Length: 96
Image (cartoon, rainbow, N blue to C red; front, side):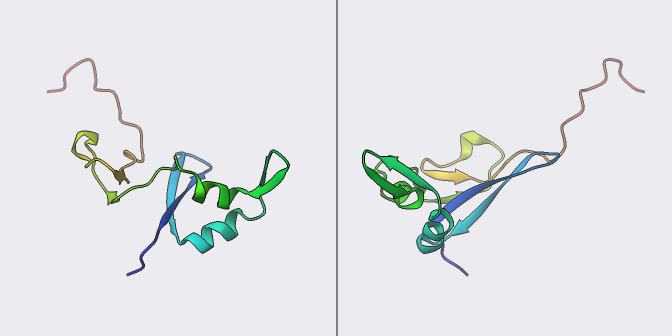
């Protein structure tokens, strides 16, 4: 079992458009984002460091897989993303 500290969201192209949650450790997150810089005043700061040190970043106590959003405990990340295919509308005429 691997314990992870951060979740990166990767949007996959194509159909259906899906997002993939990738669990990473802080060091790996910093490395992934180290080539992206933000200009803050006169300083150039790596985006990974900026995110990790930001006081308003989202943090979660854990993850759940729960189709009903009302059942998700407060402070948890819901990994449920819906069904892979769009639902079909019910037929207007009943079948016998």
